Image 1 (cartoon, rainbow, N blue to C red):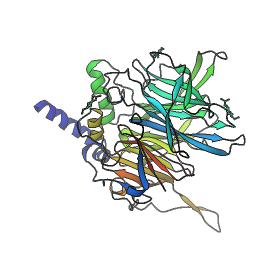
Image 2 (tube, rainbow, N blue to C red; image 1 turned 45 degrees about the vertical axis):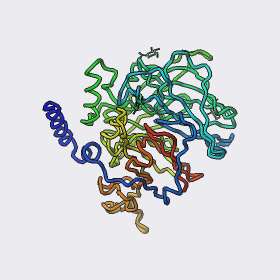
Image 3 (cartoon, rainbow, N blue to C red; image 1 turned 90 degrees about the vertical axis):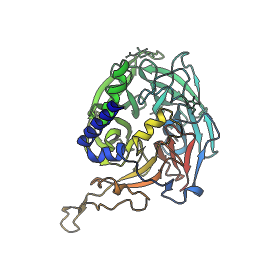
Image 4 (cartoon, helix red, strand yellow; image 1 turned 30 degrees about the vertical axis):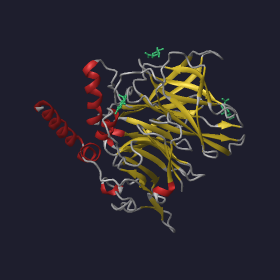
Length: 434
Ligand SMILES: *[C@@H]1O[C@H](CO)[C@@H](O)[C@H](O)[C@H]1NC(C)=O
Ligand SMILES: *[C@@H]1O[C@H](CO)[C@@H](O)[C@H](O)[C@H]1NC(C)=O
Ligand SMILES: *[C@@H]1O[C@H](CO)[C@@H](O)[C@H](O)[C@H]1NC(C)=O
């Protein structure tokens, strides 16, 4: 008892030392969030939980599959979701690592028919684990097949599975190959740069795969101290001969020194990569050189939660979901009775930083953003973090965990206006109408 108090006191002081505000928001205090809030109206009438399929639960990531015509015009849009009902027995990021056998699954949801279907695998190797985290699929053009990449934290190492999916059979994925690399220490999220290349985040350098006590202590230390040991790589593949399963992988480090690098997403023009840093409670924006895939940091936006997965909507707003109270999420991952972690989803919109003088054409810097922002939300972001110069931040959804807990991903379809939210240890999908 005494020892654990000492350990606790040491941890608290180290956390306070590294960054008082982040530690306070993410680890030490539980934000006074409402049962639920949705920015576009009453959540009781606007939001519902799609939960007809009992196995559609514990979903870590989701992505839109855009079906375009030969001119690149969007014709239709499906939602692909990665879920793992076995997460409480196998989670290489948060633990435990007890039973890797029951596989996770992919699901496809069609908004038009309001139907969700299990995606069956063609050719997936028998005995190969499947515990999906981040996933992304290239759009389909004029009905052609799309490459899908899924991070898979299997029992020996974390790999990236390549599949292809065809719009004529959207509830089927054909396995192509498993990508492995000595640099895939703990891949988490992928952001495609072409049908055969992508950025991938590595959330930790010290993982739970380390032997015995090291695997318990070091990853948690890396998270709690916000140690800058995560990174983003760029990977491109070239099949060595057509039809062959063997592949050359070209790997480069694109951005290093990111504490708990989690979600990553490329902007629609391909010029910006956004990366969530969970243990620092922020999103980093990088300018991307599309010829070399090199990245350079342009801005950092503080958030009052551990940012998890992120996506750009059609208007270019970055939708960020995350965890406002990390200890609650740990309790959920340990299967504590009645544990539920709160949810928070925000939209980040680039701010206009300069005005052009109407006569001289000179650039005038706009004044510092107001510290009172996001004032519609019951608990406004501005109560917990200062404004960012580069982006406005607005709350889209928040909950103390009693309505839709453990938010880790959110997507907004600007065509239908629907906001989707997914929870790491939550049953079903939250869908809120505009
Ligand atoms: C979690 O706890 C419930 C009972 O509260 C139990 O039925 C279930 O098997 C537990 N899950 C794991 C993975 O331990
Ligand atoms: C589908 O077509 C697009 C556009 O022509 C192309 O970029 C993509 O590589 C094609 N996908 C496949 C799997 O052939
Ligand atoms: C990772 O595990 C796979 C089997 O799942 C194996 O084929 C591959 O060689 C391993 N990669 C590394 C880098 O250890």
